[in-house]
Image (tube, rainbow, N blue to C red):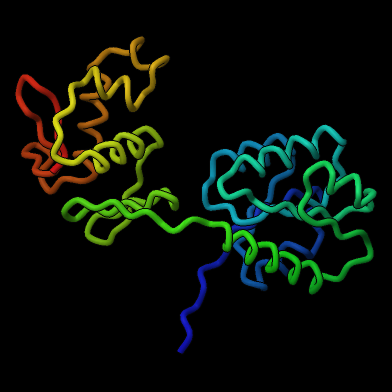
Length: 228
């Protein structure tokens, strides 16, 4: 029996709520997230690492299209953008769209093009990097953390701090070092070093059996923190 593929997340920029394209894509195996404003689509492209494809059915200005294409291209690997529009295809492709389908187009044709674009993106996706320590496993490219096989929801900063500690296990890090290396040269020096303590406490609450007696993220008195 073949293993069923998980649904691919598709961002649909559409302004017609009565358009049957959305349910057709859902029936075809896509998990569809619909948005109205191009600005919202740009934000989602930059914040949701699960996105596999973007389909645009609404009319956009030249600047809006270029902005969406730039946001899609900034993701690693880039999120392909399919434009369903009467816009001149050459100009749309030059603006950064990956494919253009002018009307008339059937839903079956749109679905087939979506699947082809997702397959092409999968070939560009790097091999997953898995970092482990005890019961913790982090799949870096998927931005996923599991403890004993169960998903753990982390904030972006918690994820970055945990990733750093997983990549440098057994080494002791001072709070000031973590501020500089995890928060960054610009942001870190302006923060109270106790910011690190707060984020360590949050990680322990989510990852440790007994956060009051941590065994994964340890405190080395007078020196700093160590994972493992």
